[in-house]
Structures are given as C-alpha cells and as structure tokens.
Image (tube, rainbow, N blue to C red):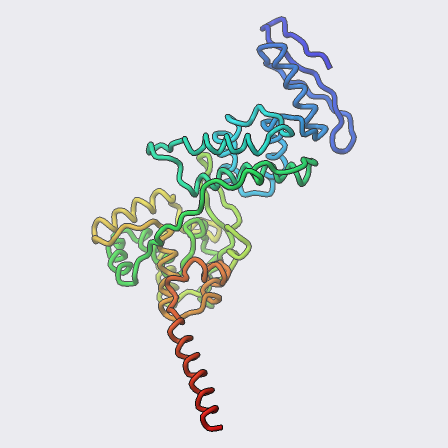
Length: 365
C-alpha cells in the first residue's frame, strides 16, 4: 500500500487496508510522519502485527502484548509493567526483530541493566533487576505461547538479580499502644491505625472501606475491594488476590470504636469511603507519631506484619492466620517462619524417648 504526502504541511501519511480477527476488511489512516521512510516502516510493522508475524520489532510486539494482557490486570499492575517496558526494555531491544533476539542479546542487555543507577545514585537492587528480567521473559513467553515463537531467549540467558531477604519490620503490642496514644488528637488517624493493627488489613483495603462493609451485629468486617490513587484519580479495584476477599472478625472494642468513628461524619452514606484520605496522609501521620513517642519508625505495611506477629506469638496456626489476613497458610509459614516457636527441641526429645523405650523393651527380652 503506498504512502502519501500531505501538501499542506509536508508530512506523510499511510492508508492501509487489512483484515481483522473476524476476517472483516478494515482501513486505517495514520498521519504525521516526518519522512516517507518512517511512514513505510510504520505500515510494515502494522501489517506484521495484524498477521502476528514474529519478524515484527519487539516494540511492535509490545503493543500486541499490551492489548492481550492489559484487560486482565488491575490498572496499577499494568502501570508498573508499562514503566519497566518503556524505560528498561524498549530503549535497548525495541528496534530488534522479535525473531532475531538471541540469548546473547539478552545477556548484553542484562549487563547494561547492571550498570544503571537509581535516583539515589546507587545500582539497581537485586530484587528490581529480577523484576525487570521477569518482565522481559514474560513478553517472550507470551510470544512463544500465542504467536509461534520458537523459544524464550530470556530463559536461555538465565535469570538476573535475586530476591532480597529484607528484615521484617513490626511493632510489639506495647510499641503500638504507645504510638496509638499519640494519634488520639486526630480521631480519623487513630481509628485508621486501629483497624490496620488489630485486623491486619492492607492499606488499600482500609482506604476502600465503606459503612456497608461493617456488620456490627455479627462483629464482622467485609474486605472485597482496594483503593488506589492513579493518574490523579481515586480508583477502587478488586483486592490484591482472590484470597483477599474475606470476612474479618473484629474484637468488640474495635466495633465500638468504628461506630464512634462513623458518628463523626455528617450524612455518611453506606457507599462513602470511611477514610477519605490518601496513603501519603497516613505515611505522614506515621512519621508524626513515631517522632512524638520515640517508637521506631516502620512502614504502614509493617502494621500488617505486626498483627500477624502478634497472632503467632499468641499461638494461632499459620492456616488460621492466613484466612484472617488473606494469605495461604503456606505463605504465612514461609514468610514468618522465624517467628513461630521452634519445635526442633521438642521433636528431638520425642525421638530420644522413642529410642529409649525401644532399648528398655530389648533389655526386658
């Protein structure tokens, strides 16, 4: 299909005809190319996309990847992926043909990633390097699974980076109670931190709560959504995982506090956000409380760790805790294994007793 020049402004445009996935004939016009060559290259890549030909560039394939994957993801999840693709993948591999990218190319790309530094001037963390590599590998896996690419060069090249084992931050009950006293001068902040600590819910789950989520008669709290601030807009999404949809039993004192919280509002509707603040606001309040009380500073998510740690210390099982906070029992065991009481001594003593009993029986014979 030829390209055309716009005599009015000297730019080039393309009129391309193609068949969509239904087999219907379509026509698309794309304008604003500075040169004829740019217009022709756009047309070539567009037709390769429509025919799902892996001779298209990685840049063109990523447009298909977005169309295929984005509808399945929460908006904030896609924004994270899109940032990595736009800033860490396409500037280095975007112009290469998908079919011609080799494991050697990926290794060279990995070495370039290791040279990069963050805004703090330090090299990218091993965890972030692993995340970047996983995104590239995910793109190639999509091409293998749905577009007949032979193999995944990122898989052949091997992983980059590693998951860091960061020290888990949490407060003891005594530390939290000291902090919470400093929050009482701002009731909304106080009630927000009460829910975070005594129910172990996530920050986004807290900020999405409405009066309709509270069943005070049965002392239950429904968690079925999450709050995000995206592109300057308040966005309510499904919770993080399927397991995150849950009912949380509240202690009686917390039910009383939440009813007092609702009385602060004038004309509060069932669908109104109970905590119409932002994550930034809560972070500032956390800093304020730590400064006033001298309690060590932790992140907001550390209150969730604190709740789980508190329940472990009180002897509850990983399975029961997992159901309460929206995790699997296996994940609770893995992430908080160092907090569970060790059973090694008990096991060894039991084996000693079993062996001793066997020896006594043999002596009797």
